[in-house]
Length: 106
Image (cartoon, one colour):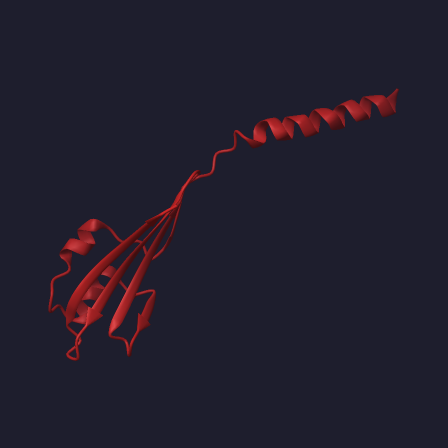
């Protein structure tokens, strides 16, 4: 009788787990170097690197002899993820000469 009772408890536990597995909530998560549209609009051509850092902080990566800075913002939600890149290019005088954004939804 005890064995049969334990089997029912085990079966109930397994079924309950599968029933609630589809109802789980996954909280949205931001990762990377988050930035806003307001920050992007605050960037002006010919700004110095120091001024850009005041607005956006340190870049995630620096390329091409530190003339190209990349900021990456990941947003994970229950059924999708977004990746936004902000790519900044500087000239020989370390002045901002190009701002590019890329967005990928999946």
